Amino acid sequence: MARISKPNRICLILSVVALLFLSLICVIGLFTFNHLFASLISRKLAILPGSEIFDNWKSPSVPVYFSIYLYNLTNPEEVLNGGRPRFDEVGPYVYREDRQRNNVEFSEESPPKTVKYQHRILYYFQPELSVGPDDQGIVTSLDLVTVAINNLPEYLKIAFFLYTFNAFVSKTPREIIWGYEDPLMSACLSYGTCDTDRAGLMVTKNGTKVSDFVIDTGAYNISNVGKVLRYNGETSLNYWHTDYANMINGTDGSVIRPGLQMSSRIFFFVPDFCRSFHSDAVGWATATHDSGVHLLRFASHPEQSQNATVNPLNAAFCPKKKAGPDCPPTGMIPLSPCSNPRIAVPIFACQPHFLGADPSIRAAMDGIREPDVKHDSTILLIEPNTGFVLEAFKKVQINAYIENRASLNEVYKDMAGPYFFPLAWFTEFAVADKKALSKISNYILKPKKIIPIVLSTVGSLALISAVILIAVLLRRYKLTKTDSVSIHGQAESTFVPTDSGFRNKSDESPYDQWTVKPSPEHDSFQVIESKPLLKPSDTAGKTVA
View 1: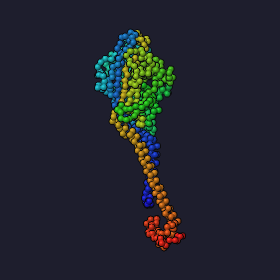
View 2 (view 1 turned 30 degrees about the vertical axis):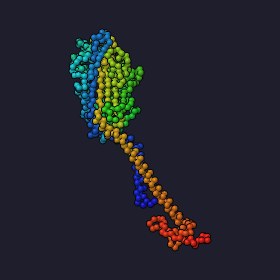
View 3 (view 1 turned 60 degrees about the vertical axis):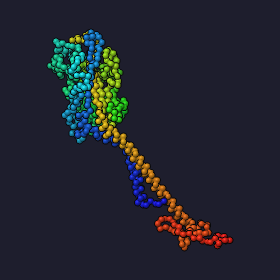
View 4 (view 1 turned 120 degrees about the vertical axis):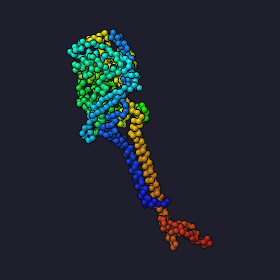
């Protein structure tokens, strides 16, 4: 076999080194890829001026909807005479939310550590998604003004002595939800006790209530992105009994930290509830508009609404000002501390249809359907690599506590009870469309899946190629060395010099002599002629020595 020339040999050796180096780079890339990928994603997720994340955070591209069902009391007279309340549901009435973050100001660091803004929500009715116009039809519900005034201190109740009180009101869905003028509320406003002259479930929500937030941009620690640092200028609340209960902990839900796992727990600050909550990952789910995007499913833990007897930590969340029971039963979350600082209105939140609440509450009424964990739970579906909330279903039921104790107007004196009277339940929901899912899939998920495959393939091919080249080099070297040693060895042991070349001295044939001479072109020998040494007749009767 011909020897490999020196330039070719150097080229092959360099190729082997390059292939081994490439293979090593691919192996290192495989082991460090997840960390590098997470680091790259983190840089893109901070809320910084001019970034795509900032633009989407300030003006969300995924529409958010508010869908509400009202509880219509069908037997108000029976209830006032001691009968069981009976309800039917009216709805849904659906509104699109316009979530605005205005007056945005970043801190002076570079990059900025915090961002300050004002948050408000506007609601726009969506007739095509609703059961009908929200200004048509009549719904009978509890008169919240009467409930509120019955919970005023005795010295304030006297101011309303001459007014007429109603146990229930019958209004259009729009009036029940967004408010209606009420003479008692006008009087309350004139006394400086109330903030408005209108009564309604969400009378202060539609563009009226503006909250000030300061949050972490995540520029220095992406795990803190979106974390609420100040709410209305305060770093903590003062509604509850302990510092722990008054903590402002977590985000507002619009931004979640990246790198979530099945063991992750995320925290939220909910201004409407005046407290923080946490949710745990409970499993995997696929997006509604399935595009191969797998999402982590987060749900709230029931321990957060257990009564203080079952969970002593919740004793800290018993209202300071009495509004209803001293401490709510399991499943009920008091809203009175943050509804009006001057009036302790006994309003309580729970999951729709009293899911997770004390069974005796629902058992005291008729017409409330059986609660369903799948349909009545608050659920978040989050893409774990980025923390993007791609689907959210926040579900809440609003109730008012009423009892037949002695009061200023005695409108409830013959009623049974007490009751956690259901007023409405609603769902705030947002679902990412196919375009948003495709963008996440193409720019984040597919590269994360494909790049390790490419690294593995390239690294394997480089290693295999290097091994093959090494084998070829070794084989060429071994064969060349073997040929050289064999031929040179024979020259020393079997050829003797003659006048015309070399003779094979081990050849016992008396007839021929082979003559060879070195080849100038190769490190080998070449046979050039063959001569008979003896004629057959010359050997007759002789012994060849």
